[in-house]
Image (cartoon, rainbow, N blue to C red):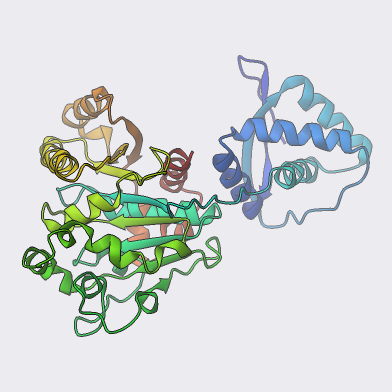
Length: 384
């Protein structure tokens, strides 16, 4: 364990901890909205107050961990570890475990209005809607929520990237449930997303290529309201089994998108800001042009159906400042929009591409990556 003192009087503590413990601390701190250094500081104080021996923690297969704690507290901790004949890394591991035990994972609150509904949308393709939908859903499941991801895009990118087969075109699908052509229960189509961190809480409704014809079928429906409510009616059969439903939308402005937007509206009796839209964009002009089209569709739908649709904000995806003025100035333009605001910037790194390549969830493939941490931060912000 080595240290260096920061300007604010905190020592940088560098040691080794088990990967599972570090990850649990990161997830719990993010869920609670607490800085890791503050959680560790409280944990060390609890460890000092414990006064006696604590259950040992397996610190084999540990890797580097660092954080900052108040200098005086760190000095006391070092002395006490020597007095108790406890190795520094073991003492710190025990302190972190004390904080985790004192701050259990919060239980999701279910309201009479149903689950939190998050629709990830932008008219432009290639901005990262699927990556954001999947990553945020994984982070929410990891944090203890029961989550359903709906792959509403007939191109099936989300389904395939998770290593799951799209639904066969001659079988049942979400589109057939929306148009009254189904022959079985929608529950039978749900597939569990594998991953130890999700503990069976993350399910996906796979896509089917029959959704390419969904707009045409909706426009010919005799029921006027079904044009905007078909998705809501179809998901009603399963959504109350979940804390959160996330819809990954196609790059479209048709009736399918109207259905997704209407699904994201604030229900009567639901706190505003609980459900709504998450909008991935890129730091370039065509992404901004596409958003203008989406905004026009949102406003038209709200006026026509007297709906209130909340914006969680923009996620600027695939950001690489090395590309120069075009992307850096575009990012500043997105940040200049105060409502909705930019709630996260996801750097263009290899981890997401690698996860797609091996067809695994990002938070399983690279749980300690920067991109995984950003997904956890987005999840925390939209569920706060």
